Image (cartoon, rainbow, N blue to C red; front, side):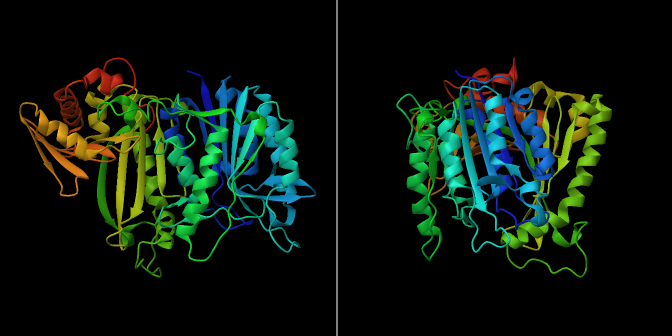
Length: 493
């Protein structure tokens, strides 16, 4: 299989130059999580988001790109943000771009392509989802310069470019989808939720991806907005349209076992606990509590919860360093502005998020997760118990592609394994499986298998999950969890 790498840049917020780009960081992070199942090397997938999206931060990553990704056979680049043109040159707006000096404080698109060419990668696909940035003195935002794009990609020895919208057009988002519309369909393609544009061998080319996006985006746009809107996905550099952007054969296979690793998106230990908005450190008495779970409430909670997220990370960081004797350079911790904090270590990744409770917007839901386990036996260690002892009460196996719950239930009922009972919802969209000797609860939905138990029983949850795998014929412990004896439980959490 070709060695694939990716660079994903998401400039969601700007200090002065422009309003935020809705869902940019979340969409970028979701794509990054999906890439390994589509044939990418997780260690060569780089995300530039949050505080790293200043001009200096982006230029630093471009200058070091060769060291970051090595020498892959194929490189995918996604840039989400805002852009403008000045004197026939296109520019990517950065978090610290200044309205008074737009060209001097932004990154030229030509510099982006130059950095990509320096990697000498034989196949480079550039995905640009860039809303136009208004330039002082111009009657309307122009976005990138189309003539420049035609020449740059036309002359490129390796690059093909896909734009979410034509220069001057807006790239729309959908509050219902909670994604940018073009990016929502991009995720649909990379997670194998559609066969549109995919070759018979399961590969997806840049041209095939563009054909799917050009068809799907206008249809979704018509459903999302009452008044007619225009968004026209474009492709530049047709000579390299055959560049392969994903290997989806495993995801689009004819079916196979419910828990086959090809279906795996990630495996995580998780806990969800309620809280009150007014108890967050950033909440002040002068603030108004949200009265509905809308976009404003989401952004407000993200802002006022940031001190709490940082405090949680600081406490976990100190405990992890002391318990596992990691060096400072072994750990990477960040509390981002979008309600997410993470701590990456050589053995696992810990994440914490705070979200508005959709059922009661005056409350929040704290979600803590551990994923990217280098070795499942780590969960059985005393150190894990000491640091995370009472935090997690469920183990979640998320599918890369939704499964047919009804078909799964039918298979069990046609040939029920000993000691297995299954209860299915009337709509056949969820099922609960009970196994003799199980203390916890096993639920199956279209998107995940969840093992629930008492808090602090991480090793027990893992044992129950492995027992669940062994119960179903053809799904062995080592097959479904390859890292149980040799490698990783979950390549990307």
